[in-house]
Length: 152
Length: 259
Image 1 (cartoon, rainbow over the protein chains, first blue to last red):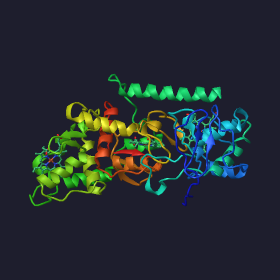
Image 2 (cartoon, rainbow over the protein chains, first blue to last red):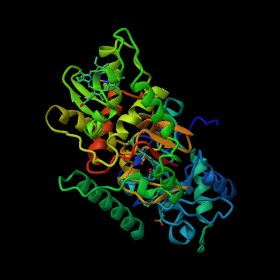
Image 3 (cartoon, rainbow over the protein chains, first blue to last red):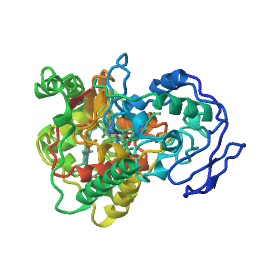
Image 4 (cartoon, chains in turn orange, red):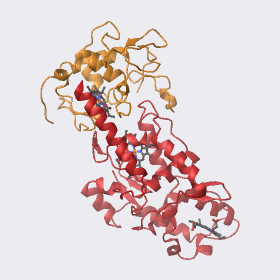
């Protein structure tokens, strides 16, 4: 297992409309429960996004969500089924949901994929976010393709 | 957006509700991990002959009668028959005035070894320690856990409770996010339980071995990429106190079998 060094170190309290800055150049603006602007300026790749989403050491979304990925066994049921999530949410809403779901629900179990965690992090993972900004963009692009119903 | 907010606050309320229930004195008995296990795993535990944990119970029985250390004593020399240990562990971890902190059963066993027997302490995860704690806890099988958090124990309980509700690791989760918010729900291929200590030491099919509660703590910490603590550390002993109090009323199953 290798883990990339993450580009963006995001800090600061999350407030509506607050500009969240990072240690090195990545920043995003939360507006009314969304992050409207791309985190990288580069369009997301839905195929790469799917791979990152199901990867156990990356998105690991299947731990908690049913997704239209029949080739993978055992989908968790902690969060909602994501099979139709692209019909229900905008790209900007999904971006915030991935970057920092605690901005929407402070008590959520869903991890923030683009925030540097600070509490008792294992030494192998210190200072690292779970995903990179581009990986988040890729997953957002993948989720936008999920428009249908699916049962496992 | 409305839907998300609704789900979000419902989950929040559910968490809070569970928290209130868990902390109120008239707490209903929680279900053991046994109740969440598959029928095959349950059957393995139900029959002492098919329960692999009993291989360690046998080691414990042998050690009980084995003379070791400069004092020339065995556990049996002072305590007599193992049945004298019936009910003892339901009140562990227990405050100890000499140590001025909580003793888990393993601390007490090692204290008897070093102070009473003048023998070497056992390693926490050694076959002897697993076996001895399994056979001593097995004497209380079926009895309800009943630890006290009053008096001297109170501040240690508070520390354990704080640990349980503190987010940690890369995934930034607390114990409560899995074991209070989602018992009975599938997380990938596993069904989450209340995460109770009543079956430890546990034979885990994944470990192919009996393992201590603190080993399980280390696993649950590492899975969320948090720095684990040492087995037998004060942090984990206080956490054990909190968890055992949460499980008060639930019957001892040691040695249990789990996936």
